[in-house]
Length: 192
Image (cartoon, rainbow, N blue to C red; front, side):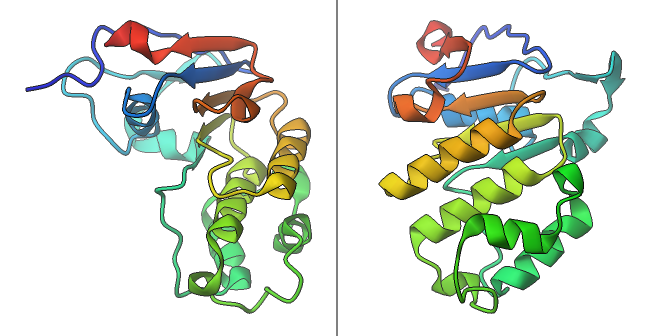
């Protein structure tokens, strides 16, 4: 057996911003998958606290939002249907509505377009908007500017400025524009 990550003992504080850095294949995405509950660690455990209370693993999903290029959207849905579906499970911040997110995305004439017909950049923008606009105290972003053009990167940074304050934000990437605003950096190579 080959260890991807070993000997990790990290504590992430509410309201702080962390960058998980390291080269491709070093385990950044694996760590985020473990934190999100998409993967279970083979050894050790992840514990979550909210407002000084331990969260049961079965409810952690309610407290986090996660965006990554490898997370699939429901491609058969239209953009409007996807927004409506999402907010049934995750309320939006600041009393936002599906229409507000639609405006934020800036996809003219795409309201009734099927997600399968979106470009990779449009899909990434939608993933980021859904994660950043959801009312959750924990926000996980894996390589957030993947598939984004220069305008998309500026849009991402504006979303970070507007929607990340007061939340625990963890960004995994080796591209500085993804995380250069983070106050803390964790080099994943320290856990190899």
